[in-house]
Length: 75
Image 1 (cartoon, rainbow, N blue to C red):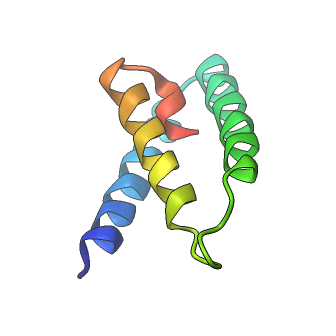
Image 2: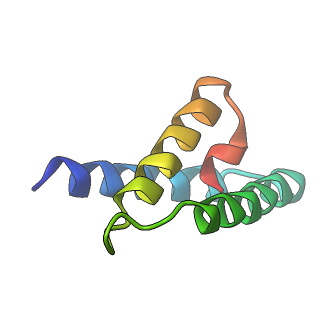
């Protein structure tokens, strides 16, 4: 499995766990972070049709939220 595929898989499993373990208020926080991420990604141009710059920005964002212990990491 490639590093990127492994990272995506681990992030998905982690994200699902955070959502499942969250109450309604935390899920609202996650949803808001998701909406913010969508806006961020829309501003990042594709690199000759390649979405890697967008994917990298999302990984960095998730890592920052995780380091802060913020449930928004699941958004």
